[in-house]
Amino acid sequence: MYETERNELIDLLKKKGIQNKSLLAAITKIERHQFVPEIMIPNAYKDVALPIGYDQTISQPYTVAFMTQSLNPKPNQKILEIGTGSGYQAAILYEMGAKVFTIERNNNLYNSALKIFDKLGYNIAARCSDGSIGWEEFSPFDGIIVTAGSPSVPKNLLKQLAINGKLVIPVGDRSTQILKIITKASEEEFTTDEVPYFAFVPLIGREGWKEK
Ligand code: SAH
Image (cartoon, rainbow, N blue to C red; front, side):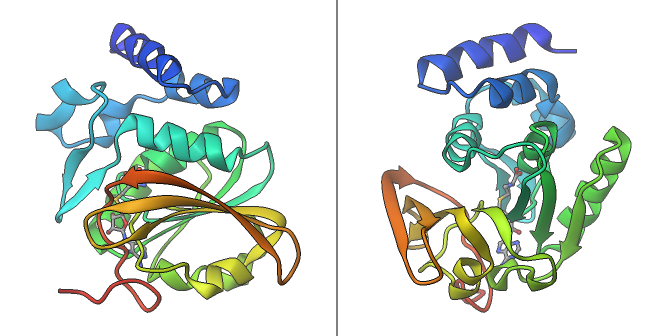
């Protein structure tokens, strides 16, 4: 269903500079409308963020694509996502062949994400907890993608990256952030690229913002 809409979205993403073939294939395959509340289905293939309840959003497709292209996950790499939300970003990583670990702090969103992963037959490791401190047990990760805005770069996430691993994280104030793409050159050395401006919901947790 909605193949025409998905192909139009792909054309738009290509025009905006998304080139990664396996990423475009994943977006072509995954039915974004299955990840949004029923009343949002007519908007599922517009390039906009949509509310998913509990004051949270499924990110704009371009943002998901840009972050994923920046992360550049390869098949069988271990990727940790912080902020499962609808599960759409995790689904993209899974379809690109990554071993996906994802953390969501909201119990309701966590449970509905589990359901959709199960429905689609995705073998994704998910947990309901504060992802700002990472998931030490399964570290190091080849990539970590944070889909909520953080006041600073959480130290634990840098620690849990493999050498040459990448952390993609929006950092800024509660409303606007710069996307940081951080590569771990060695245990102590990191290189950072920065891309302005993005608007994510806040990362709430020990190494994020305090709950209001
Ligand atoms: N990647 C999601 C985007 C969800 S929005 C998608 O594809 O739909 C960001 C999500 O981060 C929200 O669901 C929010 O509840 C969650 N979140 C915020 N702080 C968190 C934290 N410390 N740990 C885990 N999840 C967090």
